[in-house]
Image (tube, rainbow, N blue to C red; front, side, top):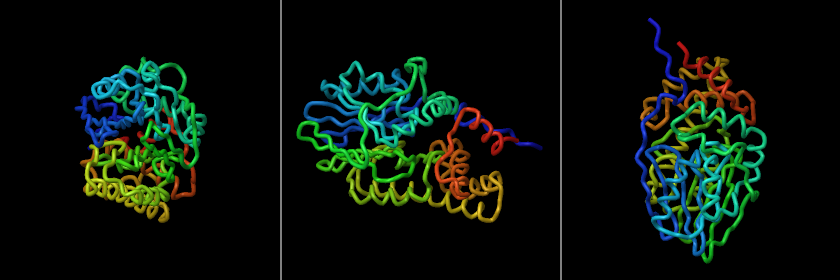
Length: 324
């Protein structure tokens, strides 16, 4: 008796999620949707910043609608926490709302240059629901207009907004936004909550140290890349700890298998079986695991930088690991 192969990635995920728009402080809001990619909003004295754009301009319109319920200030800044298509392709929607700068780390700019086109095709093929009205995406890529390395401070009137690159984890270019006077942190996909970290482009050995850098800020509230906004220090600690545990346990399992000479499929099967008990209820667990284990196997085998995912590579990997 043969098992039925799983649908490729999340092509079978068609359920629309319920959106929440939570006020975290006088200046900070979180746009979340039951484990779908989050967007952060910072409202300064004279302008608004949007952190991660949603996947298409059509989807970004709902973010704009929510913002306009609380402020009529221009959306002058779009901040990209990293280069993934699901985070950046909605940027054009903010042009008519006053956007003057699209900000990203220089590493993110370099990754868009190196692999933006391939990543775009790969992500749209994996998870069509997250790219609703994909025809609204302009041709070409979303390009930052302002880049930084390490740290950039932006003053939105009297509000200090720190834009920080604290280390590699989810990608090489990961960027967080920190509001020191409100003690609110927007982490991008460096932190997830009740949602599985996607680690297909990750640096597993660096990620726990980067989480230490986030924790050192002592945020009172945190907007993760996926999952509900974390609104107490205890919830923030739980989000950091859960992400750390998942990343560390997965890499330890894969590294042990690679060191023992096991092939990728065997390592994948054993790691999946080991982790499904504790993490299988997290959003997109089955979607992420093949990509996560493949990248971890590469890193454990000496492949320092992630290989580029293409639509063709995605399907070949999925068939090799999840095929009957």
